[in-house]
Length: 326
Image (tube, rainbow, N blue to C red):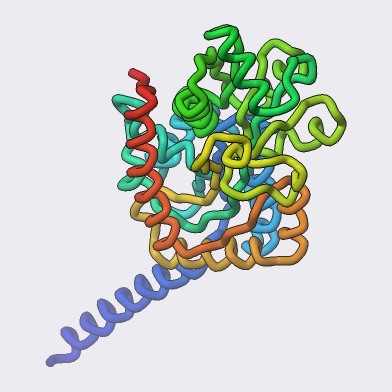
């Protein structure tokens, strides 16, 4: 190799080395700017509360601000669609929930595929749902509420976080197992739903414990039963629906972090490690206990299986309940 060719070879090699070094430093630099954590419901609900709790701790561990953005609508599907179509660079996250596995069957057409267009990071927490009524309703137990509903078919109302959400399906399952007819009133989130429930505009809801716990303790709402198979430590004196006569009733709500599909694996791995560390921290566990949530913190693979299993399970319930949205 003559001197000219050798010099050109050295120049090309040096340039390639610089490019590789720059690429490596770019990968190591994540995150180098603020991160957006999208909440697909309005402020005030469980999804928002959990997102802010996780976001606050993520900001500390990652050294970048984590901005919680509310993008509500269409039973949490608008926010999911926004994240599914975002650049897969680790700067746009979704606080997803069980609602998204239900929406896959409830909505005839969705602009995204929850299992293909979003990648799981970790499940943050499981929160039981609770059947609560306005204290002015003449029922002290689930049995009495069912009797009241049977005597007034289609007149008692229940609110949900939107069509196709967990609360909607729990209400439909309650109707089917209880042999009653209720009127479903969809809201955009727990905030406006709880306001109307407190004001007596609706009869009941099957919301997660978090947004209604303080109102239950204050006597402003009456808790009749939790919807999971076991009682909640946050409401130890409140029976389950199974104990109240609806044998086998077991539905709750999980929440977790997802990112757009094709997000770099090293970013997903780092995010998972940070979320699991946050969820297992004593202070965070205490926060979860205070709002009636059970911390989880699993692997992306475990969360993916959870999503797949729930999508299949709820597809059967959706079909049985006859819930469908164009």
